[in-house]
Image 1 (tube, rainbow, N blue to C red):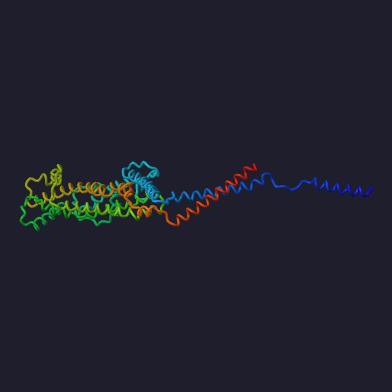
Image 2 (image 1 turned 135 degrees about the horizontal axis):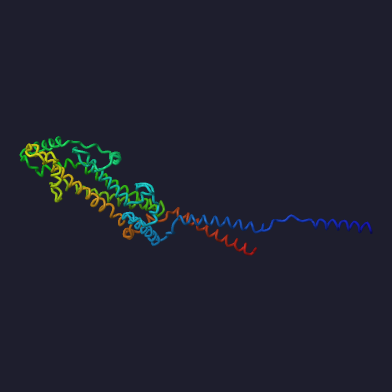
Amino acid sequence: MPSSQASNASSMSMDISVCDEPTASAPPNAASNGPQRTKDELEEVLKSTLRELTQLDEERLTVREERMFLNSISMKVKHILEAGMNGSYQHHFFTAVDQNPPTASGENGRFFRAIVQQLNKDFTSCMRLRGCTYALLEGEDQNLTTAANLERIRHQANFSAAFSFTRPQAIEWVLRYLYHYHNNGNPGTAAPRVISQLFVQMSEPWKKLATQHIDRVVNQCFNFIGTVLNYATRLDISDRIMRKHVFHVLDEAASNAKEELAQLLVDKDHHTWTSAQHFAARVHTGAGPAMQNKTAPDLRISTGNDLLNTLCAYYADQFEYFIAAVVNQVIERHIITPLSEKIFSDIVVAGMTQEEVRDVVGEKREVMEIRKELETRRELLEKELRVFNWVLESEG
């Protein structure tokens, strides 16, 4: 018995010692870390899914939804276009300000009115430098532009140099024209018909310069409108609006502007006439001190000098009128002013048919499939998150 009891006691003590040893266990909150980590991952996937849905814009299943979506784009575009045309720039679209002068590209290309004004100034400079077929050289250079601007405009316009005359050479030129084409002309008088024909020759480059100015302004309108549409909506919708609507409107505007220019050129080549009060003063000033002080000039030279002075004065008067007419009647009336009303206004949208609206903002089949897939994923993720929230709350 003693040996048996000792054996039992030994066995018992061994069992106790084993039970007393600390057992390996999971760290605190290990059971809850797994669901929490999974929940965090699900939330990240849900955020990513919602971002993708946001990039697809609003769902447009009916014609009414499509037209409402198009109207929202139209209102935003019209507001930005009007702000750019007026030069007010009261919109977030114009918040990116560069210290450099406005250019046709980059962030400063958004300041539309400033760029159009710069294009008008460049046009005026080109007209001064290249507008006259014959340049009269006398005294010091009267060019109002700087040498740097001259080189820049020459590089941009790439026009051939005008013929240059001294005053004696110019007098001989007009006299040859007078006696060759008007043998019955009365020496000592500057016939209006002669002045008109000489003026047509001198102003021949105006058509080319004005046409190029129209093309530059229309190209800037195209760039500006494209930037506005890219800001207002997705690129695929912006491209559709440009192709289906903007191209046609700008082509029509350019055509109307060139028709107006053609009429100005026809009027320019009619008989000479001016109502400017300073016309006579210009004729007198153009004679120069030598001619003004001469008491008994040669009749032939006097006739040529009077004719040349009248021609130069008339050219200067018509030069100012033509530039103002191109800027106001051609550029502003036919290109700039109609932009906000013709590009994508509410009136334009209201006049669009159901098919035209769908062509512009209707969702493509692949987009609808992507949206359906994303919506399904969103619903599953939200359901799983509700389950995990319930699990975590019950454990807590």
